[in-house]
Length: 387
Image 1 (cartoon, rainbow, N blue to C red):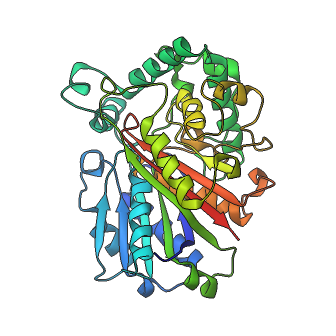
Image 2: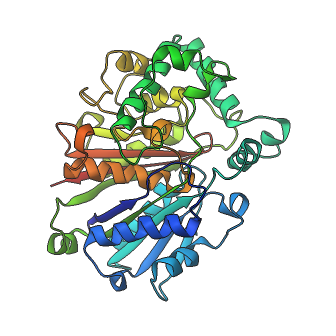
């Protein structure tokens, strides 16, 4: 297997874009990534396009050829990859494996989602397709209610971390306020989170990730080619893991720890020859604030049941020992579902290059992204090294 590196990155500003179509978002982010890579588009041999639900939310399926046409990539092979909220990282992993195997030398990986033009009921219905329709969505379960159950079970098994959940949101909004691409660029307080509009106890609106329009793209190539082309720091993919679990919450052995995350992380650490302490920063899938606490425990950063303590002690802050979601995460940067995993990698590469501006952390050599789909039914974890 050949070593693979991220050669170029590009993304749109995340937010509500009524005047922009999927085509517009794809063109902006894809063009930025190709330009950042310093290559001609004719060098791209394949496109891996991530999208969750455009066929319902935007009436647009067959996303691979659409993206290729918009970007003028000619007759290259394209494929659309869907894995709910983990779609972006799945597309990245497919592109990475294609380059690593020797099938292609340079590929483009992209993701896009347009959601904000639909009303709340329609968006909720679309997102619910990431759970089991017959056993869950059909009887009225929503993702906020599922993750509220997870929070309450966590309270029962360990302790009440309502305050720490709010701190996760406060940290995300602080980081987002420093990120020009973030949808939410304003700081909030613990009190504002806890007294926000109730969604499903204990979650308020400020505990939940955003409905977002946006796109993100990456150019992948071999590390050998990257060393010849790139004028920037080489960002090598050193570890990757992909695991799954049951789609329904009721069939899981535990809901206060996600088996898919634990296994995907184990695979990534073993491939990289690393351990949790080696990771300088991580973009985790904080679809809800309780999820962030569960994630940082499942990834091995903190002992099970102690994630809330780490948050309260400031360990996940930009200046902490394990900065989490320096971009603002899904909570503040935004959650354009098909683009989310790729946008996470965009942030990791930006940090490892030392290009994150006011949110740049001091030590950024090893970064990780963690992306789950549905109720952690799918998980992808990737580790990157800058050198």
